[in-house]
Length: 234
Ligand SMILES: N[C@@H](CCC(=O)N[C@@H](CS)C(=O)NCC(=O)O)C(=O)O
Image (cartoon, rainbow, N blue to C red; front, side):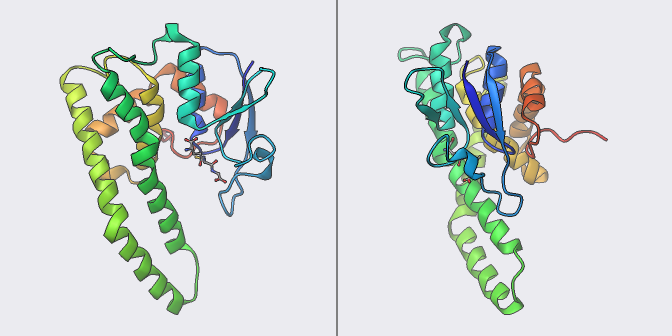
């Protein structure tokens, strides 16, 4: 049985959702972020030397840790082909499928993380003189690159999802749930959780559709703390 090394409030929610959609039996070991630094605890380093999550260990002889959420979703999609979570070379949707699968970590996540980290740096307490200068530098970096880059990505995703909706399709790519949905939901729901008023309509509707899936809900229950999930109504 595979073991998922899960980190609270993290990309490993992708894997919990994937496992729930596949109806897979698995063990879960939860590691908790340091509440001050948000970094993963050292316990994860004993599993995988970079100490990041998600990581899956398999019951194979090699005990090789399988890391990178994109690699994990591909591994399980290929191990369970009957679940039809991929498109293959020769399929009409293959190029789009491949593009968006890699877009998630390759293009969407980097400016999102940079904005998050720089926002945290700005919010940190510091003497007023240092703060004034530091904030100017941070704003200059954001203005020069990350804000524009992120806004372009969001517009690109929104346009794509509008095309899917016009075709009457609920999913990110092709005509059915694929590994792209597991990969793309995380940055989109992180964005929706942190700046709900700035999220365009098709992205918002897509996130809500995926979050309403029974397997997604099951994954939420399995994972515990997750800041980017749907807001619980009071
Ligand atoms: N590209 C990797 C990123 C892995 C990653 O950075 N995970 C974050 C959680 S979302 C992490 O473990 N952060 C804790 C740390 O860096 O200490 C993936 O998709 O799996």
